[in-house]
Length: 143
Image (tube, rainbow, N blue to C red; front, side):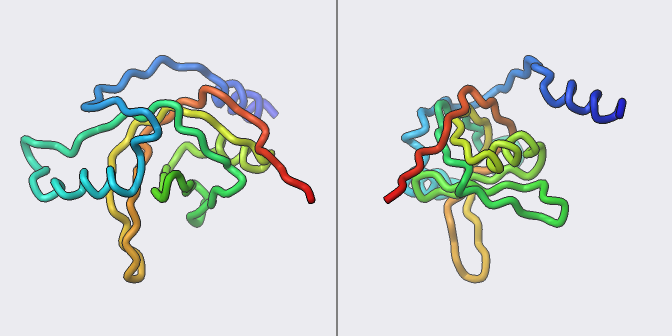
C-alpha cells in the first residue's frame, strides 16, 4: 500500500533537530540521587525560572525490559540506574527494537521528575526527544 510505503519512508527520515538545553550530562549521572537533588529545587521553578532541560549522552538500555503502556501503546517505560525513563509518544522505533530484543545506546533530551503512583514515589526522567546512536544485540545467558 502507498500509505505503508510513505509511513516507512517518513519513519526512517533523518531530520536535524536542535535543542537548547541547560546541562549536558553523561548517562552515569542519571541516578536516584541526582533526580532527588534536582527535585529538591522544584518548588522554585515556575514563570521566569523554568525547570531545567537536560541532555543525556550515551544512555544504554536493554529494551527487553521495557514496558509498553497506554491504550494505544504509545508510551514506553525503561529503567536505568533505578530511574524510570519514560517517553509518551513517538515510541514505534523503540517498540520494534524491543520486539527484536535489542539494546540501544541513545542521546536523550528531557526533564527530571518524581512519579507518585499508589503511594510509591519513583525518580523519573521524562524523555522529550531522543536520538538512537547504536543498536546492539542484548546479551543472553544460557545455562
